[in-house]
Each structure stands twice: as C-alpha cells, then as structure tokens.
Amino acid sequence: MSFIADRLNRILPSQTIAITQKARALKAEGRDIISLSAGEPDFDTPDFVKQAAIRAIQNGETKYTDVAGTMPLREAVAARLNADFDLDYRAEEICVSTGGKQVIYNVMVATLNAGDEVIIPAPAWVSYPDIVSLADGTPVVVQTTAENGFRLTADQLRAAITPKTKWLMLNSPCNPTGAAYDEHHLKALTDVLMEHPHVWILTDDMYAKLMYEGAVAKTFVQVEPRLRDRTVTMNGVSKAYAMTGWRIGFSAAPVELTRQLIKLQGQSTSNPCSIAQAAAKEAVSGPQDFIGEMVSVYEQRRNLVVSMLNEAPGLSCAKPEGAFYVFPSIEGTLGKTSKGGHLIDSDEAFVTALLDETGVAAVHGSAFLTPGYFRISYATSTELLKEACTRIQQFCQGLS
Ligand code: GLU
Image 1 (cartoon, helix red, strand yellow):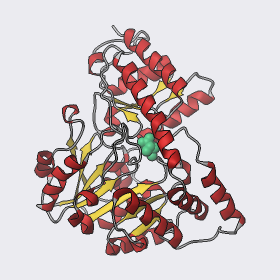
Image 2 (cartoon, rainbow, N blue to C red):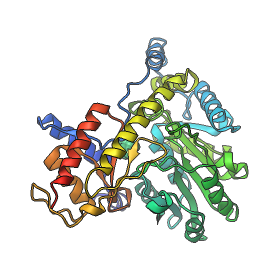
Image 3 (cartoon, rainbow, N blue to C red):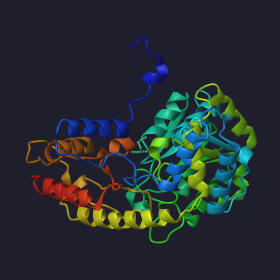
Image 4 (cartoon, rainbow, N blue to C red):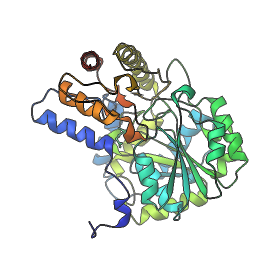
C-alpha cells in the first residue's frame, strides 16, 4: 500500500506473535489446541514481585520516572549484572526500556545508517532482522549448523565482517535453538572481534539464567573486558523472572551510547511503566532461589521433550544447553503426506498440518531464518507437553 512507509514494507509481522494469536483464536472457537508457539514461561510472576507492584500503586508511584528508569532500578540492574557476570557496570550505563525488544530497537535506530551491516547468526529470533531493516540497516545472516551446535564459529564471523559491519548481534542461550556459548566458544569470537575494532557487539542475554546441568552462562565483556567500550549487554526480567507482560528490559552500555538511547527513548515512549519498574527492582534485587527451582523443572521438561521427539519417525532433536526451546529437524518427514492429506514439502507445511490435524501449535524454522526445522517452547506444563509430544509422534507415524 503506497500510503504506508517503505520501511514498514520491508518487514513482516512477527511470526511468533502471529502463530500464538492464531492458536489463541482457535482455542476461543472451542478447538482442542496445545500452544507450544509462544516463548513465555507458564510460571506465574513470584508473589513478592507482585507485592512490590501493589505497594508502588498504593504509594503513588504512578507518575513519570526518569526516561532511563528510576535510579534505584538502574542501580539494582547494575548490581545484578555485576553479581551474575562479574562485571563492573554503573547505574549511569543502564537504560531501562519497555522489554528487551525496545532495547534492541533503540540500539539499532540510534546507531545504524543506511547500508550499515549487522551480522546475525541464524537460527535467530524472528525480530532481529526486521528491527535491523526498520532501522535502515542490512541484516547479514550467517547460517550456523546443527553439527556446530548451532553456534557461530570464529571462521564464519571473520568471513562475514566487512568495512560496513557495525554490529554482531548474538543471543546465548539462543531463541530458537537453546544453544549456548560457553567461555571457550565466546573467546574464539572475541579474538576475532579484537582484530576488528569497528565492530560493536549486542549480546542478548535474556535467557542467561536458564541454563541446564549446572552450567553457568557467560557474556562477552566478562570473557574479554577490552570489548566493554563497544558492547551492549542486554537482558531483562521477562524470562528469568516470569514477567513477560510487565515489559521490562535493560541495556548496559558505554555512557555515551546510553545517553543517545535515552535521547531516543525520550522522544518515543519515555520511561517504561513506573509500576513495572518497581516490580522489576524487587525481582532483580530480591531472593533469587526460585529461579533454580524453575530451571530444574525446565530441565526435566527439556529431557522429556527431546526424548519423545526423537522417538517420532522423521524428526531429530538435539539436546540444547539452555533457554526453553528445542529446534528439531523435520528432514525425515519431507516429501511425505499426512493422514489428513497435507503434503509436507516444507517446515511451514509441517507446522500448518500439525496444527490442523493435531491442534499442536509450533513455529516453523523459516521464521527463524532456518528452513527444515521447527521450534517448540517447552515453557508449558509437563502434562500438556506429554500430550503434545504424543500427538506429534502420532502425526509423524501417520506420514506416508
Ligand atoms: N520472545 C518470545 C518468542 O520468541 C515472545 C514472542 C516474541 O516477542 O517474539 O516467542
């Protein structure tokens, strides 16, 4: 439509959101739907966090705050990041935004000029390339492989860097694969980045607390402190604290860039919700032990889902290190026809037929820039997961 700006015609609706909404609508129509499409914890926000929000309302904390968030929250965020990753961020380097998505959006809009390149290892979260395009940048998608654990290698990074590269955008543990970069993997990348001083790093650590088998997530600046002055360390409360709807994300970045992010945010949304900020402050500075309890439940679900999916003919599913996603390959189902008469000629056809015939909603790999796979979020009850995986097994058994 010519009335609409070119920049909007460059992007697609978010597929994770579109499929989740479709599943919700089918459910409202009375269909028996199990949605494994949204990356959203099924756990409720902890009560002590809710109480902080209620107190904030009662205390009249219902006005504008500083654009970058209240000072107590910025201090608490810096302290949390410093404790978790052994860093030394100060409150003035923190900008609090309306979810992690706005952090990424702000960073890209604040820094990209037309033609600037952003390296995005795929599979990647659906919104990365579109946010880059909205900000006039050029996404440079580098396909990682299952053989390399869906991790970007040093050689791939080196080959992708050009004089126009402005950012490497990296997400560990990764949405949609759950793959995490340990210290050794990150060091291989930071060595390359040290050779290219013009490249900045946006590290999306949103899932860092969701690591399994006792592993502890690392972040870029921790592994290579000399990258501190060209790294944005991004995180938020959505996943680790089961607070998706509160919309609080944050960046830790050099003061000069943080000032620009605040300038941009001050001319768009201003401060994130004052009540959500009070809740987030309690989340990051209060007791953290409930996270360990959530993680052990997620780990059991991961093991269950991986083993059940690997029993489904035509699917093969790696066991990821973190987050709450698995990303199975559908290669062995391609070219077959389902009992309901759907020809499975792509990952999109697979998830469409699966939803239609079994009521299980998942997101096709192409939405994450990697055809031939699909993403399941296992942030849902164990009972529902068992039922969903049973339906997936039956669906795959019915292919001929
Ligand atoms: N990050 C979540 C997901 O990937 C939430 C939906 C979205 O914003 O994409 O499903």
